[in-house]
Image 1 (cartoon, rainbow, N blue to C red):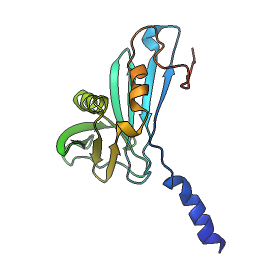
Image 2 (cartoon, helix red, strand yellow; image 1 turned 120 degrees about the vertical axis):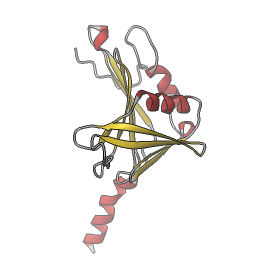
Image 3 (tube, rainbow, N blue to C red; image 1 turned 30 degrees about the vertical axis):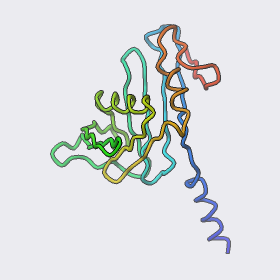
Image 4 (tube, one colour; image 1 turned 60 degrees about the vertical axis):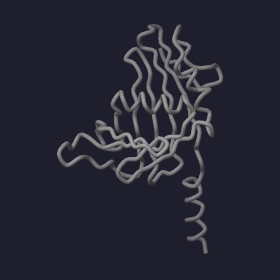
Length: 169
């Protein structure tokens, strides 16, 4: 009797929903080293795709993350994987660099821009990798409010005071 109950209890965290965007920032004494991160964690640890946007003096970078296994690569290019963004039924395929470990992709700038502009215009976007998929619906999350702060320019105060800040100097 205990084994099935224990198994059910262990599965409960995997069933919970994390359909929220989270933000953090690093503010240093030197502005070129300031950065901000905007992150969406998938609610499906086996087949879901997490999104991470990183902004700093280097510009804005987009990453996709998975948890369960490595992301398949292209046979002709083992360092690359296919990412397909689906917006209102239209498919936008991109080649993304697979990072060391195989569970994270660096999106090309065109894909990052397409993803951000779609979410900014309050449209849903599905992210497809070989064996993984996540649908982002900005109206169902805090995306717009957090993104405005993430995208702010100026004195290094990229996020609002209510968002957790990592202030290591």
